[in-house]
Length: 291
Image (tube, rainbow, N blue to C red; front, side):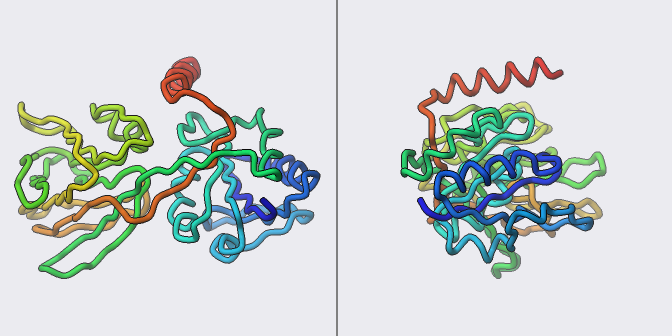
């Protein structure tokens, strides 16, 4: 590996301390690096003058890897663009949990192995998310974690109908519904009572959010299925779609949110051989200790 992009979350890596250390390690290993912020902000941080910075969308097409410094949100934010450019991602956790991150900030020296291609790639399925209104496509996005259809801030339920391959699966009055990948099973879906699924599995998970019914259940579907979440009559209420926690897209009554497995796959760089369940226990024990 000869060229990588380093993408630090400036709100996590304060003063770009970890970024500077990673850049120095890669330079010593003979790997060319360029830095790029994962997102734009209204008040851009002061960037280190000694490091080369570029726009993420400009730097990625020439890169062999993207290294993200932050939490899972940073990785999710970068995943769409990196996947479209066929660039694998290495996550370094500077957040609280970091399920998708391969390394903690104290394990930074391991990135030197990128120079000799001493790593493995792990693929994760993504979701293809489309909103159809009156038979016309009006919104499209990719998601690595989940697509969430939810109500607005007002404490009123919304009526949603969930179908699988054209057959109604469930009618869900409540706060909303989460359709997630196995990667997203440890995120919002788990908090709503959904199952934990090994992240390399190929499944769609459908989990209701605070459903106002005794019959609400989570569903684990084949990745070959096509899920449609249809918004019922909402009157003066509101409904929104968010993919991977991104900007909410406002839905109208009878809009259809069509979700299926995407052709694209996110590739994560693995430098360690660690069992998923060991990681799961470690992350949650650490989080409980923080609280």
